[in-house]
View 1 (cartoon, rainbow, N blue to C red):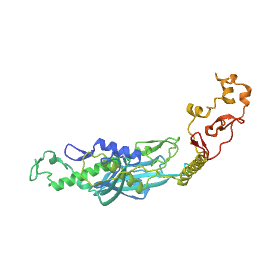
View 2: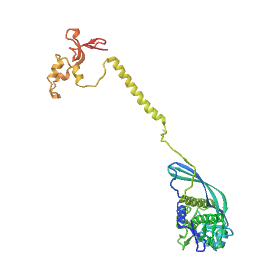
View 3: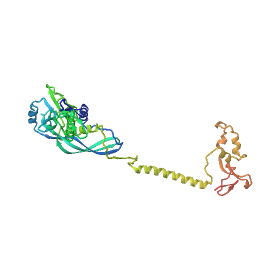
View 4: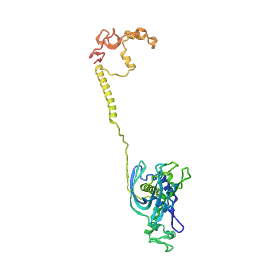
Amino acid sequence: MFDTMPDGEYKMPYLEYSAIGKRSLLEGSYLTASSPCGVNCSYDVVFAAPSLRCQDVDANAVAQRYFNISFDDQSVYYRASSFHQYDDQYQLIIIWSESKDPQQAGVPRALICIAMAATYNAHINYTNSVQLITVDVTDELPLNATALYASSLFYDVRGAINSSDDIQYPTPYKNFSVDELNEMFRGCQLLSMVESFAEPLNGEAVALGTDGYNRSTSLIQEMSVFTNKSSTYEDYNLSPDVLRDLMMNVSLSIFNHAQNFTPLIVTTKTYKASYVLKSPLRLIAAYATVLAVTAIFLLFGFCAMLQNGVSATPGGFMQLLCTTTHGDGTLNRMAREACLGGNESMSAELKKLRVRYGEISGGDSRLSFVAFGTEDETSPLVKGRVYDGSKAS
């Protein structure tokens, strides 16, 4: 995760981690990763990562002590240092002029942040493959700057040979036990993550001339904490909590970039599609109305069948044949005159003829049958009487 100098001193983070830090700061959040456990799943993991402990300090004193400037100089709006060693700690110093109104003078603000080694207790949840991480940060202790900035820190490690019992060093200059060496590597890895966060903030934003035009050698003006985009003045949403969250986002982004896997207990969820009606009464009312109307028509149909006694079969040639067999009747005679069909072949008398479906008798009641005929040739049907083998009911 980090490079070293020719003599083994810590140098800087790998460029890929510096790039991750910049991307996270510009996004204002951690960079997510694809799910290793499915579409809907979650798991808990504990890992070491850096955090920040920041506090507000006297801006004028910090500006003079660390940057050798005064806030009376109106050209200075923002300035941040790189992380540097102060006693046994790594410190980041930020000063800026806080202003909500371009017509008012800015209020000097300053923060000093200390890099901490911490334990991240992370709960990682994927819902529809979208990652959400919640973190509880514990066991925070300041990184030991004196130990990690030691000269020739990994000088002998470069030529060391692993053995089954211990590490064989080429010289007795910088010899560490396995546990000590792991602790040194861990500290430098955390330091590289801290610098991936801090280096993009390093620099200054100044006003050139009287036109209020601002330039910055820092990434700060491209971040979401730069709350005013006017060229006449600047304002920054900076606080101990904001910087702590930004450091956490960078740490989680680097964690998501990891290529190694570790066995964990994973909880998976399987969702079944279901429909929830906002107004179920509307659906019930619609289907109930259709059911009621259908039931009414069915009732009418049954009543009609009981009264008629004959089922209402679909029309067709057979039905026409069975109801128009009174060959000697007036209706058939007049219909023969229009046998070619068409409205023009039908006589006016046929069109005005009054017909009835009733009993036609040939004089012998035993030969009575039912057919269409004129009112003079037919008589109304009588319920219960048998007509040529069929009973009217």
